[in-house]
Length: 327
Image 1 (cartoon, rainbow, N blue to C red):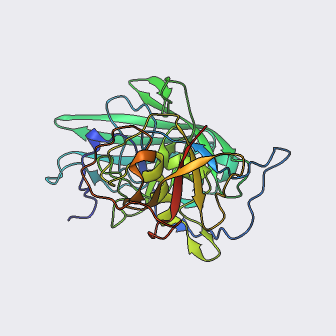
Image 2 (image 1 turned 90 degrees about the horizontal axis):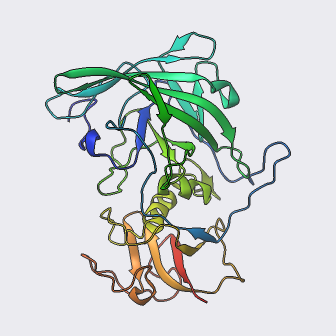
């Protein structure tokens, strides 16, 4: 595969808003230290009961998904013939200057000498070629916020400008503006799989209404470690769990907003003594490794794969366990 070529089509992306970072790369962050809040805000502790969702990401990008751009001047092609592409031209900084590269420090964006709140009012200029048409799109980073309860997670208010009209980059199921988290990987929107090998210097704007961001807020920060254990596979397993993607084929089998009990053996999500539940499934990066169909989130479940029944807790090799809340 040629450098800069992606295997999946950008125009059919149903989730990831993907940019890419320049030569500074991603800085590794160790997650062993206890997360703390910022300022006087209340610290949000991990919860064991969470809401699930059907979408990998939640967003509003009009008719072009901005999937797979890079924060340098390298073209990222939409098709194997390299006739359609998206290409970054400039990152305009708050002081009016511009740069052509950036980096991630955990979940925080860094462009030029700007980081944390200083990246507010940054604009990314993209040239897009589709068929015989070439046009511009602009992403405006309006506001940056540290997420209480974490030292390395930030969220961003972003607008997309199309034909001189600004609209929220991310929206929820009711069409209301939401913020985005930043992740240093790319996901195939059809299968939900993480793209491997990872596209060089990639970055996803993960809208908070989708599984990618929800799993970070559950505590599964894919760049971090806990007691020397990488959370990358935990995050991927969580995206399968949140969407009830049992077969790991990108098909969701749940209804948005259904509460689930979440448990792992790292102590990120712990058993909730006040929430009665029955074990639904245990999860790995490729879907459910065991499943109790009678406890599934939807009745009369029909799957295109065979999954063994769950036995003793975590005996099937799963990383995360999901439970169905019972009265």
